[in-house]
Length: 490
Image 1 (cartoon, rainbow, N blue to C red):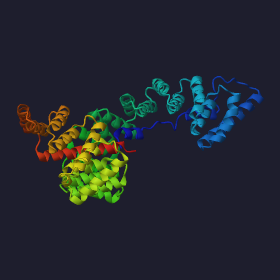
Image 2: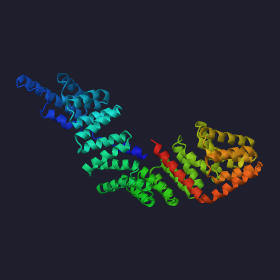
Image 3: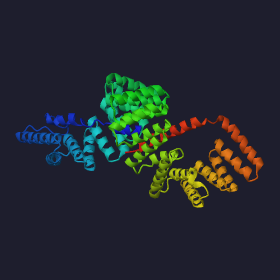
């Protein structure tokens, strides 16, 4: 789950109390300012009857008997159309019935009758937001804060409104004010910390989390602190916080976060154990299977990694992510598993042919396999796959590079030069591209340009990482790809 979606999920508007303090005015016998005082017994009896009817409607509303409340309130509105209490309660009844369009008329009338009542504005604002009338809702939420700037509820609601509207930067100030008013408000503090983390105010976010930890030692706080520490490159501290969160609350997400952090530290053996332990509790978790696969791959156990990715793919067949990982293991997997990888890639592409990365992976697997020797049909198939990858993503440098390798193997040196040059334009810092381009130029008779490319290759080779570090970079790319994929899952 993405951090933004966690904010959206945790955002809370304080609507349960909205209007009740005002509604109780009529319940206690106090009437709206526009009602005249009639000392006659008939008028007093009518007023008492209306008050009793309102109390009955209020009780029905409390018991979520909305139809009964509506039946009692509608005659009251007809008799006293300018009654603040009846308008507000009928609006809330329609909200309870899931009819915000009908509710809005009465909630707006209540605000018109008593514009200084913040609860009424909050109810109207929330209903406007439900109707996707965001700008009007913002006006009402802000007006509630103007009326009661020292109100925790008003500030908190404005902050949560901005979160739910996707305007995280706007949420910070009202959430800060709410926290200053009530430092013990955990929910507000947690959403404030999440918002600060999402807007990259890491130092303040960490400070808020530490304050909340004095109130409650919660797993979600340690997890958030782990996120913050990672963002500021405090990796050891981040791993420790994720571990605390997972031990306090061994949820799937907490175990996943802990395991991922171990992967990023390249501590693969402990990561294997964390993911394996997590799968004992959550055997149907694709993300833990993927994590285990990456851990096995990093530890040098390619076949175990492949089997883990197979299981992850079986659990979520429509997700291409395990197949992306499998494509990168093809050249080091055993022959039996390599055959299965090819079959899975082919099957997925039969359903989703436009995936550039999987077309490239399948082509690469075929290009590296033993079947490539003197097989014209296979050559044509690889060429078609690479061209399909390039069609799907014209900036796919690796696809041009592999196409160049294919042509060079077929002694089509001029075609190879053309593909290597395209790859170089997209990724000019690749030593491998310049080396293969130099080879193709030399074989096509252009020795002068070939020497230029070899010189570039030698310069770049000195600055490129060693092969073992390239594998670590691949693993790191795996991890970030996996986390991004997990964040997009519902």
